[in-house]
Image 1 (cartoon, rainbow, N blue to C red):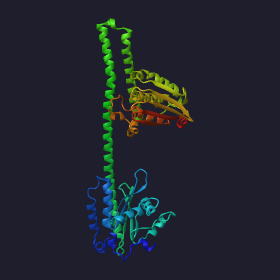
Image 2: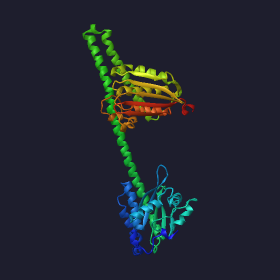
Image 3: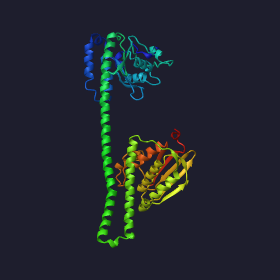
Image 4: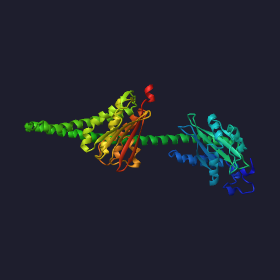
Amino acid sequence: MSDSHHIDDTVPAADFGLDDRSEELSERTEADAQVRFYRAMAATEADYGELLERLARAVAEVIYDLCVVYLVDEDSDELNCAAAFHPHGPTKEAIRQNFAPGNTGMAKGLIRRVIAQRTSYFRPRWRPSLLQAYHRGETPREALDIAIHSLMVVPLVSTDGDCLGALLVGRHNTVLSYDETDLALTEWIASHAAMKLETARLYRDLRQANQQLDAAVQARDTFISIASHELRTPLSTLKLHAQMLHRTACNKPERITAEAVRPKLESMDHQVDYLDRLVDQLLDVSRIIEGGLGVRWQPCDLGSVLREVMKRFAYEADQVGSTVHRQGLDSLVGTWDRERLDHIATNLLSNAIKYGQGNPIEVRLEQQGAQAILQVVDHGQGIPQEAQDRIFERFERAVDRRGQKGLGLGLWIVREYVESLEGSIEVVSELGEGSSFTIRLPLEPRGADQ
């Protein structure tokens, strides 16, 4: 390695942010170092991020001069440079650039070897060219801004025997290199650091679990509140009409005529339909959450399903002043689950009527190659850009303050059912211009052949 990669001995070490610690190192005892580490790491378990930074600093200040903390990602098994410390800021950044795992990470191969074998790497006299053996033909980067003359890499092994990562420590001092005592001390530190990491991860996971539990409880309470309100509304209407008919039959039976009774019976019939849809949504949610998404594949005519759904919603559309126009193909056959197609169309049309503000609604059915394209377009209030992803989540109606009815489950159910049929759904919307929901379904899904 060229001299440009080392500290010039003619330049005082202080110019690089380094102190001559030869005297301190020679007088230090192992017990002193352990006490200093304990004090530096006291009460760090509660904050995982703080623990990593303090660990790098504590090791660097106890072992001298620098420390890089590597951790194995719990989900992907990727190697990450979790923290690094050096008393000189620019040098610390140079260490991160040279030793962080990646395409040019100098120590990537070495760190992986230490983690895989759970064995420490110890070189009292070290130079970057020694990394060549760990790069499998790659050329290690050697453009260090600061010289490292002594190096140790020690695995972080948990009490269960899992290797969480590794500590890389390096020394600049050319007078006192690392020795066996330093190695033993670093391995002792690594064992205690691994326990700290385990505890901190448990704290972190516990907090996350508590947050998820709180969110689940809040979602449950929100759902119960919305469901009780939505179920009570049609029940109240049914009870009111029943009481009115009962009083009229008892007190003025001559008024019980077809003309007088028909509107109330029609209203009661549609309230029962609404209750039926609410119950269906609740059952859909239960099946989806429990994983009961087994699809009953069969030849289906999506055009026929749309006609049935539009017929069911003719009264509701008329009540709000909307007209529903059918466009495109009258018939389109594919291999799907007819019941799910019905739920998809029902929720989309219900949504369009609810938010369409009495404007016309278009239902389009087309075929593009091997795909069916179903589009439901309203010309109502539209959806804010920032809310267009959230509307496909459960209970999104809970944050809607405009007073429309619903459990906030319809679009979530649509997305789940569309994806179970190997399709996709997207929305395009502008405030005041309405919304367009487009569903793409393969005519012959791969799952139908299994």
